[in-house]
Length: 268
Image (cartoon, rainbow, N blue to C red):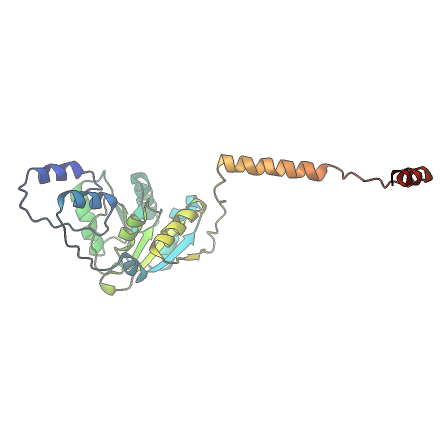
């Protein structure tokens, strides 16, 4: 509810209720907003944690496919079809991407529906119902639309794009591997997403295996350095080049003459 922008409504309700009240808060992940709200309205609360976040993620098999950003849709369609994945929940960051994937997959013969903020709640409920019943093969969703989704025996979750935070990553992959059942989390990463994935691995203390699918090898280069770093490197190269271009000065050896010997003798 906080992610959907209802924090003011929650605060209004709490401010108008009696101070003698019992509040119970439930959340898949405890974000900073939730912590702030809990600190403000709860009095010495008791916290019950079902499983540790890292333990929860560790029971899921993680793989990351390195692929160009403009080939992600094509590769994912091929992967689902060639590996015969039955039900796949695909997470994206924008409504536009969700619509593009849905259109592309349906043209490829993969029955697909999407869920995002512009789709009515009744249509979202129908999409989830059809997905649970196996009437559609792929469900594409944004993070906001996917809050609270609970699908039994969901084997595959795909991060088409990396989320903005580690908490969102945990929430996404937590849709699979439930009740200690087998779960697979697949992440598609382009060159510019390498660093973001490494940060997630560091936060969760996990290592995600990198794979390359034949025919979809990565050709994009990693992002360029920031301008100030690049400028310093170019200046350093110029200085090094100037130094290497300058001919070394030859030190002429002085020949001692009879006159020099006499001068030295007189000084002594």
